[in-house]
Image (cartoon, rainbow, N blue to C red; front, top):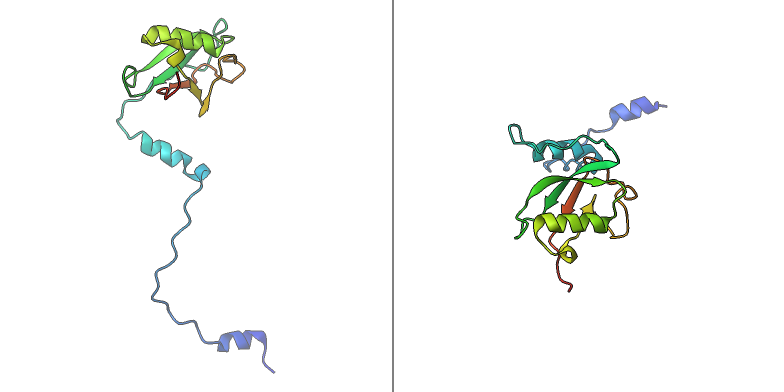
Length: 140
């Protein structure tokens, strides 16, 4: 009687296939995060200076990125606020600086809208954080 090795050696080799190899799986977000950042910031492109993540005398300096529609026109600037400030107080200050009505200001941090009674500290808005001022749609 033959052994398994003999049987395996005697088995015919599979026929070559004309079909193309299956596509490689797409990388997950964690494997592609650095690549996306590199693509988003090509060499030689101007880089936005982010403030250092420090709290100085209870204040934090934040980067504010505005919607590209008028009257904000995509402005990017920095502003300093008390870390214990409410979102409502921050909105009022930004509305004054931008010349818009306070009830037309919304703020987003890390993809979530900030509520008026929350504080910057409670929401984890620290120095160097990016706040987005999207265009407010609808409503009265």
